[in-house]
Length: 387
Image (cartoon, rainbow, N blue to C red; front, side, top):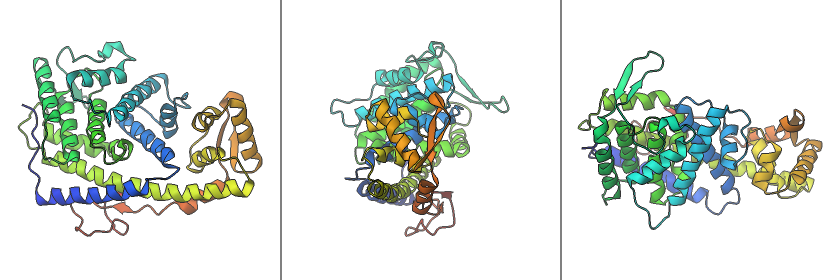
């Protein structure tokens, strides 16, 4: 027996409807825009950063962007980088599976995704069920906070979960994804990487829906920013051991809240991104710059550090041409250079910092959708997480 999906009350249904409305707005906002690929890239990077930071990896946005772009990391340690690349590979496969008409959930798929994530350390049995018991400890206190089900139960529980995911049901996709996450993390089928795998599976279930690009549906960025609440609700549901008969309503509510707040955040980000890109286009016209330099200015204007290799990867140009472009942008005062030779990187100048400041929206708290009235306007609410 695995955790069963709780019956949704009227308030959960209303919150789900709110999220659907936000996602429709976001779908319209990002449709047919030339910069959608850049926004998608940033969203993927923030999801990778969020999921890996939960596991204790010190990941910057630049590290995650480098992983997305297939470039060398600017800051990450060797272990962190291999974890990032593994997670990127698994999530890239998830994106490939989003519209695969031959798709089906299976234990082999779960094991394969785990191998992609964890194959940098064979001692962690990548792609194999754990060989024995497993315990989760509070790293700060050393206290044992969770014990996974008996190892002999793992294959059967995974089979049951896969059967449930392959079965047609009337539950909303965000709820199905939340329950897939909960069950996998509670089964704890692997020696390591169970949290990342559970979040990856949740993103896969969302991706298969196909209404909105997977990188805009993921809540991994939100989970990374709200780790304490994430751990607390899992601890409340688990109560220290495998208890699949427990009510999972609080977990479903937590995930719906995460979807709501993440959707508000990404919708705000898309508006800002559109205004910023329009301002960058005006700079290109003013200085008669080639269209490809848009990519360099878009990255630095957002506050990211840019290196030659990343610019030439996203602009698809040679190293020499990238160097000439970046030198020209420096001469015009549109970017600032730091360091020498291989350590050289570029940041926003006063001109592009001003663009960023003028195109950013005020950060206002996002309400808890379960507390807010049905017609609540998140732009004026004084409660909840910031967008």
